[in-house]
Amino acid sequence: MIARGDFLTGLGGLGTLAAIDLPNYASTVSIGVVCPLSGPFRSAGEQLANGVRGAVDYQNRERAGFDKVYTVRTFDDQNSVADAIVNGQFAIDDPTIIAVIGHLGAKATLAMLRAYAQAQLPLVVPAVTADALTTQGYRNVFRLTTRDLVEGQLLAKFVNARSSPKVPHVLVQDGDYGADVADGYARQFATLKVDTKITIFKYDKPDFSGAADDTLAGKPDHIMLAGTAQDMGPIVKILRDKGYTGPLAAPQGFFDALTASKYAVECEGIVVSTSMPYLALAPTAFRLLNDYQSSYGPFAPVSAFAYAATQIIISAVHRTGATARNTLMSSMSLGGNYDTIVGSFTFSPTGDPIDPELYFYTVASGKFSYLKQAHSSTFLSR
Image 1 (cartoon, rainbow, N blue to C red):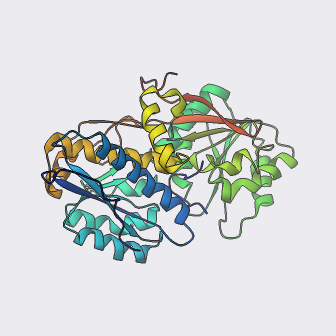
Image 2: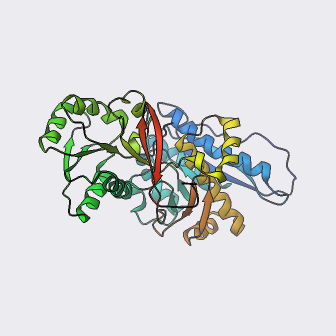
Image 3: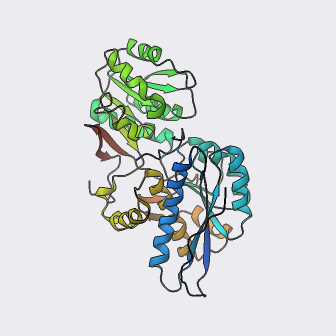
């Protein structure tokens, strides 16, 4: 099951790394991970936790003699607000933890923002794309994935360059995810003097046929699906069955195995945006990627960004020698560039990446195929 409104995971006890033989003069730093390790979101939570473990494993093996040793302490929030409050507080109360990575879902993360801020505990968020995460004014929050409104804008730019639609249309449900993506998409087309029609329909009891009829009545020449494949996938076949043969696009919610398998025929040629780079074209990631896969298996998007979150914390500690939360938080909030397995990050005062990146894929013959990145960079070879 996929958490809606959060970075696609796609393609409550305390846990620590296995003991390793280290000199007794090595200083130890703990990173807290709060995510679902049981319940319906366990699989995605384990992907997140394994991303952190993989980065820490690598760092501890490659460390120089006097470098700090890192451990991971995991807390199971089951992706629920109630458990997030309890287990997030456990992480806060552990004096060995210098920073937290998590949570998986937007609601669980938002519920704990104030508590982490009051504890001056840096929170690095690998999975949540909801705009609300970085609009609260807290200086201890650092988000890696591109926020929804910006993703909508970047997706619209790519769609315009690729298809130049004159009558773009957006389908979005009234649930937790999609509205900000749709808003950014429509805003971007408005700058081009192109009016975007939007059809909003129910999430709890969706009338796919009615929504399709409303959309097609406007005779669109391009349709964007501002949702997830799990929730909105069925409407694609209905649109096709009702005669729509034009191009489709969707945000990261459709960067999902369902899109290229269950809905492969209807979604052939769809453009899907995501924060996840095509690592086969990232030479600097090869060694880290192979190391991770040898221990933990497939490198899911949420694992990749959890790995990157860990690299950022380790890099910040290394630069400053910080052993206290407030020192680390102050250092990270002052800016600086961080190179990670998914690219380079520099954070704005709000905690969002400056000049956020997005990557575009299409579905071809039942497989995702990489197209290009939103901004040219040296991270990918093309």
